[in-house]
Length: 382
Image (cartoon, rainbow, N blue to C red; front, top):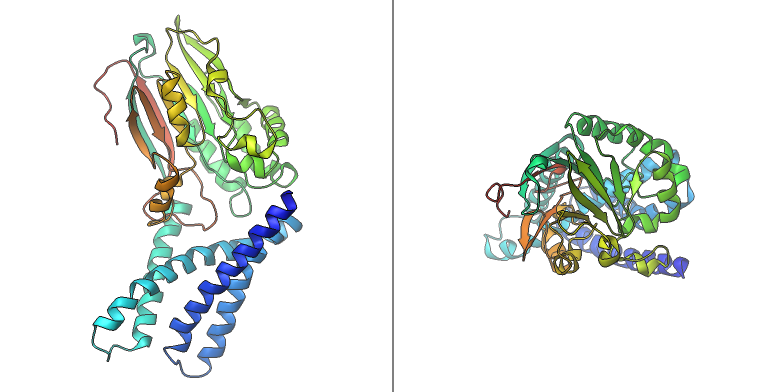
């Protein structure tokens, strides 16, 4: 069944890619009537890059990472650039009709290409070179004043895989360790690939430091990559994996219940316990605040019904590449930042890495520093 789904995905991706690239070919190569030898050169380049998109998942599955990574890098880079090239080309369809017809098809093609390169350059900087520490104070009514200032550092959606490796993970670990965390949490989608290929790339995670431990929950991509194997491997690195369960964190006689659930979609993969907030909270101290780790923001409905004080999520990437965030909002109740959902706070990370194109436009990568407060006026929804 998994093979059938994968082949169906490749078929849909190939068809969609073909249609998009045919449109780009007509608008940007045929219509401008470029002088020779540009039409042949541009057509060959466009067809080759287009063919690489549906081939890249096969390369990643079938080839060693060292061999597949350069091709997947090129494919993902073109995925991002072609997305913006399509958007800008479509955006110029109406102006082409309204403006003076003396504005040639070549001019529109060059403007679309130039706009795409600017968007791509900005996006690559925000994905590869800019890693923001987002500091947010969150008031919890049940928080004992002795725990005021309790620091939770959140990583999410790192997506270690074909284009993110050990060097990036090392950079993240160094930044986290400088933040003096009480707890470090990883809210899913850490990896895109199996343990054998990526073990050495996630190895620096064993050096994460926090007074009360480092915790992990599964995201949907762990199930694409072998969740059981990854859970076992991360535990061997010293991470504490929460699967519909909670732990008690105590300091100076005061405490917090830290709970974690399997990804919302985990039951669809027939591997794991499924998403169960009630099970995760069973037996918790009723007078302690509860911080729930849940990969997808949509867990907030069940969390609020169960009396969770704060939910930490990721999954959305903050939209990653504007205006893609409009589509993400159709699936998730919150996109990024801090929000109040009835009596429950929810913070949604924009993500620490990226998926697919090595670009972030309007949604820079982040490490989240959540500082808990017993004072009721120290945070406002964002």
